[in-house]
Image (cartoon, rainbow, N blue to C red; front, side, top):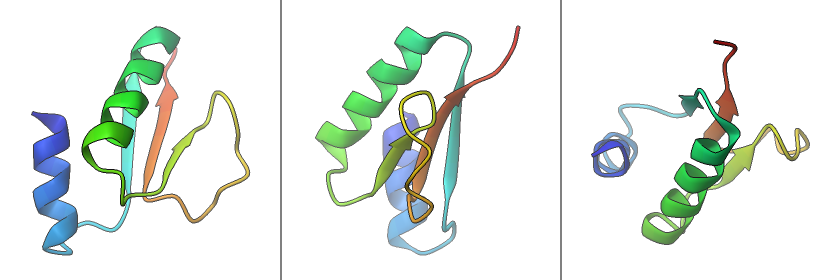
Length: 65
């Protein structure tokens, strides 16, 4: 659901950047892989692995619980 919603919002230029938060690192990796598979044209950045891509459209990270 999140991928299709973000696809619509970015295609119509209603949003520029997306912050995807999860409570576990495994969920962040899983989400990034799914986004990469379904939306390969978007630039992605997992902040748990690298913070070197300020041009990323979709940023993945965790939050403290």
